[in-house]
Length: 227
Image 1 (cartoon, rainbow, N blue to C red):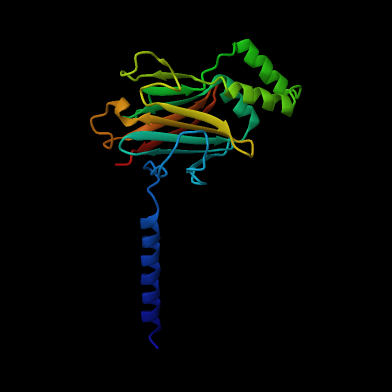
Image 2: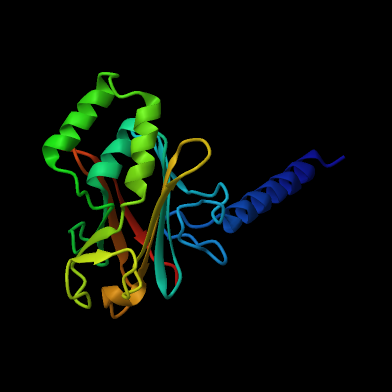
């Protein structure tokens, strides 16, 4: 029995299986393919359980995806304090198509209509336990019905940096809660708005920030767009 030959064949088979496994995995430095027939509605049913990244510090999942026409973002936030900050002060996605980590373009939603001192008082009530879960949930539901303002910067095709969720530019924003109490936020931006000669040449830099408190940056990502 030729043991060395058997061992060699086994190693070759193992190497082939390993290479095949890695060949099927998506490149981690490339934006993923968005779900088919995606709808930006604050519901992750389109995404299933495929949000790609996890932020350990903030306990949230998120994903970035693109087609040749549209850039998508989806995020699921479990932490109630972070949900409150986003609800009253917004979440900002900053994008630099040249990968220089500069805030070339940004979208902030929801755009707070609450005075800073009012937000601070609400946050204090929640942090000290004076704002009950029921009261907070009722306030959140009422707040959701009033969310329509979006702030966009850097997009030369947009006449004003203040638009609404029913804008005609193609920006789509939606926020809601799932049955488990997670906050869901979805965003879509037309790729044409970035005016890049070759959107696939450079890695794009992405930065998330929860507003309402200093040093609330979630993450910095540098990824290639999907051709």
